[in-house]
Image (cartoon, one colour):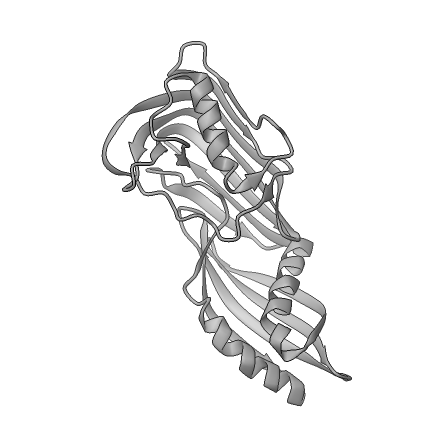
Length: 267
């Protein structure tokens, strides 16, 4: 599912490309000036829809709310070949690699409750999606979060070690050890949590805990623990769009050297 710019449904291939690009530009800065290619001599029949997000940077402070279609839909577009790539998409100091491909894909036109037009994925012969985050990028993200969480305690974050284990096809556990220093005293802060992935490729966080070694670690962990509670139940979208009516199949979580999520969709 892709939100579209404007208030009306695109009537030409050019309209479609501009509408997708303009809406993506509200949350991303592109390295490629023309990231959307629509090859459609007989629109609304589309030979190829390609969205090139390679090197794009997230500019939004918060992820936009998930689009929700309401009311009656209209016949949209049929796409022989759909390609979406982001190698990588950068968010602050971390990067995510994204690859999505689909064949014989059908989209409906719909609108959300505010009247904003949407492109809703309604059917596909087959497709696959892959999301990859390296261990180094997970570490960078953890360091940024740790610095934010401990800023008021005047704690210096020296290093972070992130370890993931897979609990099943849709689940993973995180074990984060933070080396911190306050004044001249060093300590270890230990954070654990659980991730569960759904058909929209959202990761839901739960069971967050924080403990600390020594006097400084105990003080800092008591300060952080209430803040962690705010993140319990929070969903983190791994991709900036929805698969619409289609459910994922064969979803697999691989945590070797990072976080690697793969899945198929369609008939």
